Length: 144
Image (cartoon, helix red, strand yellow):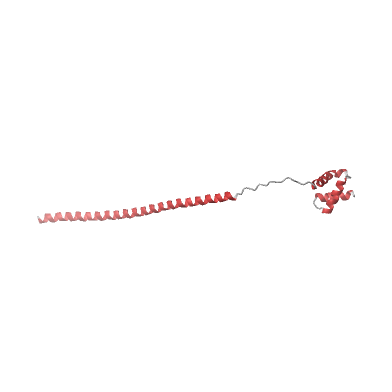
């Protein structure tokens, strides 16, 4: 075979541009044994490919299934749901306490307003009784 042609095919082979027929031509050239010295490194490669082509692996390969991470996500979602329910329960309790406090403050404000009104009315009544007492004492003095 012509050496220039082989060198061109080797260059095409390195650039991954060869066809299957051209690769077979290279394989034949490099396995025959009459190889140019500057292409000797390719001879090792092609003889290796030819030798390995016949090798087969006879041992069984044991594949262990991956542990599913879906289970972790399931537990995570269950934990999140429990925490959500717990927080809703606590939030509801706090809201009830808040409502009771607001109701108690409203009742206190109404009672305070009522007592203030009662106190002012009692003062008015006390002043009226005091004036009546003074007026009654003056009338007694006049009648005596």
